Image 1 (cartoon, rainbow, N blue to C red):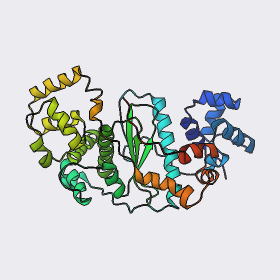
Image 2: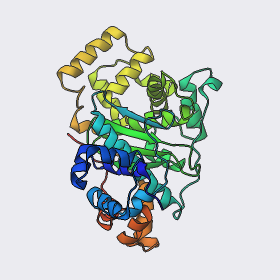
Image 3: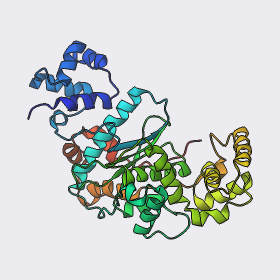
Image 4: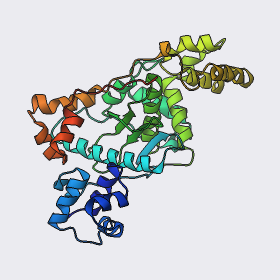
Length: 354
């Protein structure tokens, strides 16, 4: 098979290398590496071996023809702060594409629940995001009140939640449901540096994108995804009676019940008209002085939900299918060492950072 030039770029970016750094490792000019990635230069068998050694991937990695998805808003969404360096984003997108390819190959031999992830045209709901959130809850037969385990609800609908180290605490999560191949379920990459409440809101934000924006992105979609998450996790009819006499103590007492942050509860109270904006401003200021805008009290931390479906998929290979690391590595085009680290080490649970 011929070398796929796009895989050279993905491999380089996944390792956080610049063109100049890879050129130095290969003893080539930066222009020549650029020509290789642009498929303007032939990659000989010897050169392929050098690429494999320099980038830490087996030669078969560079022959893959899997489709690469980038920043396209209808396929890939991410909750992030605006100051994430471009290099970090490039590394993250390359690694996410690679991990998605791994899952595609794994799912060819491991059965998972049928995908019941709804997809709605917002126009069919008159543009009312809250109505879409209520429709999803109804489709999943969720009872009134708090969603006790959001990760399990997503998994029951066929979504896969993948613990992922983005290499920065400025990226919270990503939802990924490209249309090709169609049998691949939606994948939710969840930051390993999130608190329990933030992780839940992030997953719900990404769920909103997948449910509403897969084919119809728009300029308001980030705001719409937040609105979706608020209604999904705190339905107006259910949460409104709780949002009375709101102060910091009240917000702290409601956090374990609704399983969202104090900040999310206060914003919800404002949006539902349960708190005046003047009083809310006072409460925001109090939270700022106490450091709650950055980190809410540790004693109120929520348990971080464990993605059981993903762990079941991983366990199937060594336990039921009797795959050794070298076998799985050959299937997903990774070295045995990296396969062992990613998929055979004791599973790392999502953790909370103080």
